[in-house]
Image (cartoon, rainbow, N blue to C red; front, side, top):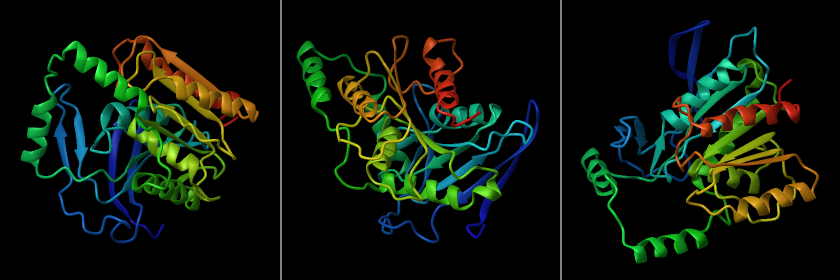
Length: 300
């Protein structure tokens, strides 16, 4: 591959040694963010201590290859959430990539560009402003709910984040043989802002950047009429910050085109839970996704 591996990590896992390879998505500066100068930073979340990655200007993918004995040939690109301000790196990133890896699917963790957030001090101050959460009045809560209900959940044109997702799919497809991946078995799963990234790809793609399967986790849904939909998995908490109306519309749209679609609303959950090992029913979303992949023959 000409886009050279930046780092090669050897890690020990329960069933052997695996290599994690990191690849740059673009030669030189990523188009559209040439003037971005804030340094990339990893900051512990005050609510969990887990890493949040800020100021991403150099998009990369980290490849988690499964053992050859269980490799299905399928790959899932993973787009963490964070409101395009940061990337929730563990719960919506590494945990998911490692799960796929253990189940014979190549997990490909996408570090896509985030909005500039400033220096470490500025980021820490912004986190102090939102944590711990402050109580709100009944009128403020009502205003917040009304805002959520009318908030836009899709872009009418390509976004920078969507561009990074499209480039990731192209890169993986172009290098499928070297990565041990079947070029017609490349999917993407996105969380929150990462799900909006995936939605932007559904709306805007060419033959090389078209995913073979999309999973949207608490992503809000699309209202546009999609002309060439692919198998779609939708999952959100029952009481998500995005109302479920658009998910139902999306489900109906896919069904009307006789394209496989699966919708799950899970009660024991909240927006941003990702994949954790805390015994909650929410974490079954990934098992349900795995079963959906089997049912649409994305994996055998």
